[in-house]
Image (cartoon, rainbow, N blue to C red; front, side):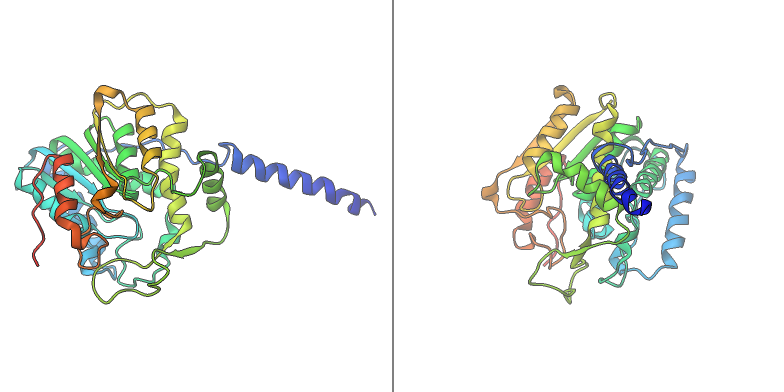
Length: 331
C-alpha cells in the first residue's frame, strides 16, 4: 500500500510544479534579439527575394504575400509594417503606399503561419514566441539595408511585434503601435501572465470565433473567421518579456494609437504600459475617442473590414497620428 500513500505527495509535487510554471518566470522563453543586419540595399533586396521565392511555393491568398514597395536604391527613411493577427500584408498596403509616396522604402512582411488560402486553417496553432522574435529580427535586419532611419509600425499583434523591435533593436528610430495586443479586455492585470503561460504549456489548442454570428469565411475579403489561443499567447509573450526584462529606455520615439472604441483590447492598460516604460519626452499618445465609432481594425481596407463604412475617419485619425496622408481606397 506504500504506492497509495505516495499519491498525495505526488499530487502535491505536481501542483507545485504547475504553480511554478504558471505563476513564475520559469517557463518564460528568452526573447533576446539576435541581430544580423544587412549593410546595403542589394543585400536587403536579396533577402526579400528569397522570402518571396519561398512564399511562391506556398498556397497563399493573393493578399497574403509579403509586400515590398522599393526605390532602386537605399533611401533616407524606411518603414516596416507588421499586419495584425489573423490578417495579411495587404491590410497595410494603402498605408505602405502613403509612406512610399513620401520617399520611404517600405517592407510589409507576412507574419509566420499567416496568409493561407485555407481561411479555416489551423496554422495559427504553430506560432511560438521565439518564432515571432526571429521574424521581427529578420524584418529589422532587412530594413537596415533599405534605409538610414528605420520606422516600424504595427496593428494589434503586429503592434506587439513593433514594440518588441523598438525596445530591442537599436536601429529602430521610431515605433508606432496601433491598438497593440498587450492585454485583452476582460482580464485583471495579474491574470494575464499565468493564463499565457498555461496556454503555452497546454498540449492542445483552442479556437474561438471573432464573430459568433459568422462561423465561416466571408465570400469577400481576406479575413480569417477564427483565432488560436496559442497564437494569442505567443504574441502576448512579447510584451511580457519586455516588462520582465527591465530593458533600458528606447533610444527612439514611440507613438501609441489608443482607440477608445475598441471592444477587443484594453486601451487604458496599453497606455499605462507604455507610460511605465517609455520616457515622457519620447512618447506620443494619439487617442481616438469612442464617439468616433471605430472598431479594432483601424487599418484594414477590405470591403469586409469592420471599419470599412467609416474608413475615411479611420484613415484621417491614422494620418494625423503617423504624419502621412493615407489615400482613401477606391469604391
